[in-house]
Length: 214
Image 1 (cartoon, rainbow, N blue to C red):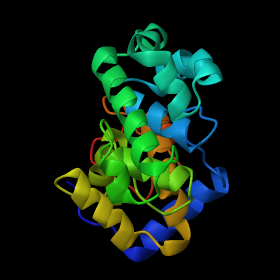
Image 2 (tube, rainbow, N blue to C red):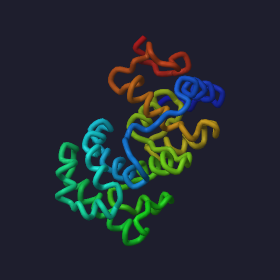
Image 3 (tube, rainbow, N blue to C red):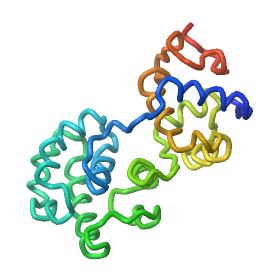
Image 4 (spheres, one colour):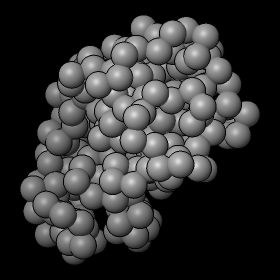
């Protein structure tokens, strides 16, 4: 775990991320808050590309909790069976859809606690929805962010909650809205787990990682 970087270095890092990509976007396709919840829940231990392929036709016919319940668990499985853990995920999507209808008038709630109470929705999923749909600066820490946070010292921590707190505490407020997207994209395409592409890295001169592939 690298030591926490200082304020000025972190500001310079995110200034560079912002200059390269001023409005980073999540890569899961969705048409409303409900389909975003479903897509993020389906993405656990799966790639965004794989989820998008599965939901392309699904969201044309089931873009509300009511329509998903009408489709039913077996109908949903037919659309998502290319995704890992699809049976368990189908059960959770049907259950969360029923809860949304019964308790929230078919609308997706916008509090973290309410979102986390839904089957298959953990803290990371809740934070993604709060950030992407309601533009709240919630930080969804996935494996990419956890790795980069500790590798670079931007937001080190022993677990995902500690890394989330480090982002909130140490990244300047004006970068908070897009912070987790910049970090995810950097981890997905540049600062990869096994072979980081350090020569293509925007922040290589600011990064303390000792095993740089220069």
